[in-house]
Image (cartoon, rainbow, N blue to C red; front, top):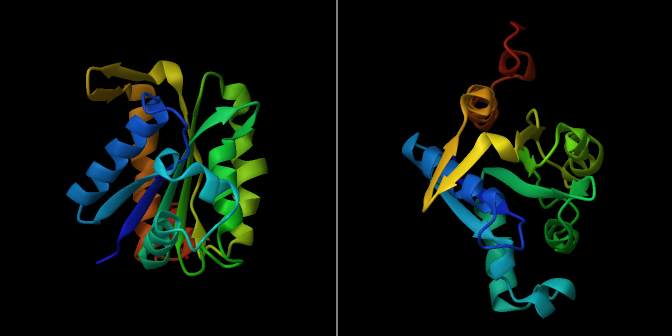
Length: 186
């Protein structure tokens, strides 16, 4: 049984990105993939910024990542890039910190003008960390996310495509060849 670590890189506890990460962790667990949600904003700032992997909370976060078979990286888009909080965490990982893992890069943002932040900024970093398979990145536009109290609703314009990307992620976790993940036969 594959396990997943959902990492949210938002510095805000009221962020839609964090709500999406919660939603995905619950959904993956319900679909038979035990998932944990690591909120980077809760890690000790000084230890995180100084890459102090001997700090118990930082060491536990790195260990959670090490034990996971798959990773979902959820980040808000700031200044046409992924969050600095996520960058700081990725920088403290060992050179092949994603070795053998399937990774799903996911971002939220106000405009599709920022969608390339995933493929041109985050994907190269994920690849350099040795991910076994990086599935198609997914960008959620803020206007497709509605928060009411503790509930998150993903509007149909994004819900259907998100379902497709999650199916690719499941197949990547199961080791299905890349061509099959994209819906083509080998």
